[in-house]
Image (tube, rainbow, N blue to C red; front, side, top):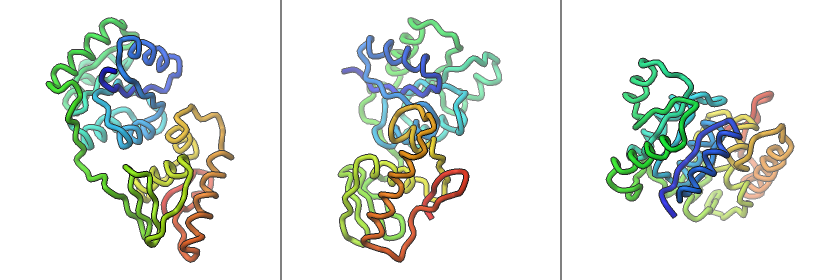
Length: 232
């Protein structure tokens, strides 16, 4: 399998087209449909390159670009946008983009540009490094170990399902940040959010109950009414 490419595109048709194009060319692909989901994917497993749409729901593409480059400077990023003005292109290249393609783009040109940015990396995607440590995440008396999918509260192990774990990890990586139900669903289920509020609510409730069994007096996840959830 070739280099791992993260596709960040909220249009499901374009995302699927890119997915088929890249897998057909021998690449391994991961799809994200929002900026929040894209950052979560990078946290979970660093890609060798990213094809990044600028017009994303919630977090803007420019912000996603800066965040990825801050976390993993060696990741190659190709920005994809309908905007074709010189000022925009120059601004994005200065912000860290490795290349820029204008929609609608030619698929053969996109593949050639992807090959070029990977070659410029000199490593074909190997040896990527994160700036921040990933050994353990801590919040209050919760500690999680991403490599082991292990959760401890006050030193006691908590058994969570995979999705419960991913929700808790997402919230703990950004303490104080409010995540909408759409943010959480798209990041954890890796699917487009279609009003599946109950699925998120049930998983949040399960997490709370399991944490409360060990430390009932502490509140970890706060509901922000009308918006979503955050670590309290």
